Length: 362
Image (cartoon, rainbow, N blue to C red; front, top):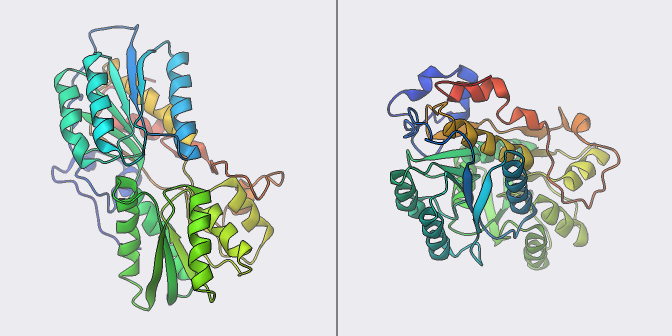
């Protein structure tokens, strides 16, 4: 595991506990003071919100957006716009939709940016209009946004290191990438690259694209194995596609190698629990909890609790042989693509979340 350190030019993480600050190891963006640190909405209630998401091409995006809608309804927050582009690569359309949302003057915008850098100016326009932006899953380098996420680079480093350890630090691996060019894919690539640099006897034998969809990844992996029947020693996949990759090896009649199960599913974890010799390493994406926390953070900002920084980062929750058995329900089916929640309370537990605010409520 490389110790790259945090990108903290102003030393803002010094005000956090060591455990909380550790989540920023190799975090790809600088930590900045939040533009909302001393701000409070002029309203005491009756808040409105806009959602600018992405197409629910994967299960975790659908669950994330559905949970945001549910939590906003429970908090009596009216959704005045609920937009998403037609394709997960259509950044220009998403930015156009974001501008539409700003024009409606909601009290807060929930945003799943397809690409972080092109979104900076759009987020600034919202901030200058007095509208905080909550960025879910993907991150934005702007003091006007509060990005609520795990550290995708550190996550890939954790799971990648465990996977490469399982193959003895030598051999050939297959890379299964997500959507080319979007932030989450770029950060996974960076994390894997960091650990591969420490394993000079590991070579990347090939690469296929799964678009963060298990069925697409399964098809792409099957095609690769058809022309490389000897298989590979391990697989580094960028997220949510592990079960599809596993199915591809089984369908090809090959023994499944160690697969980095970022964005783990109940099905893969259940299969691993039933196969006690398999060196399972994965990490959870607690989608429901992440969405719940994002709405909580938005309401705290509106009420004037004052976020200290713009990047709310949680330490990745790693699942391996030390905790797999306790997390898996024996009733789960090995075909189930439901997210493995792990221990959802590990994602910004209340005592940690309070560290991020100047005036935290109870």
